[in-house]
Length: 218
Image (cartoon, one colour):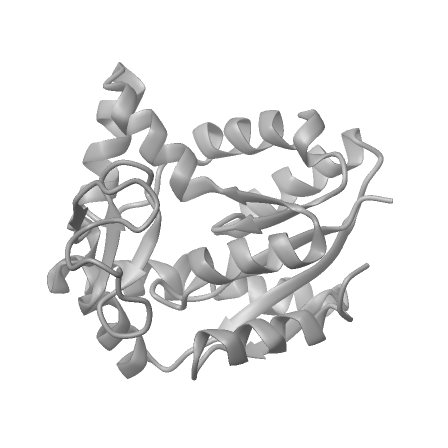
């Protein structure tokens, strides 16, 4: 039986790093909407240029675009055993879309993991965040620095700060998060799917808490 998980929380909570670790520990696919959208940007298509404009300004991409990307990915063989959805759903409309996608596959959500991180910690995390310009691997200057300064451990390409980590953009992203994404906490709690996880502290400690929240490996 497929194990499908939602991992959500404020921007800068560490969802990318923890999503990959959790998926690997459970033998699931890691599905990051951020990665899929950045891939669209690199394609330099009309859609990619629209996505870039929105990401650079801290706005969310239209629901219809993201819903279609996720629905297509869930139906692939690589996701048959289940997924850790990182960055999706972001609002109640996307919650309903995910429900429909899973129903079409005769699957249902196992749990929604909510990473709780204070706003002050978020600002600190985002200011040191970097990503690889080649493979999108995530880094942080304090908690996950590269072995060679400014270079990706995996592919050797240069690391860069993301445009959406600029202070004025971060403030806008937090406002959008509070308005759009925080309602998911209540929605999933009402369905007895919500698992609150302390997202502060070391990467290993947070990873252990997430595993405990889903009862370990299936």
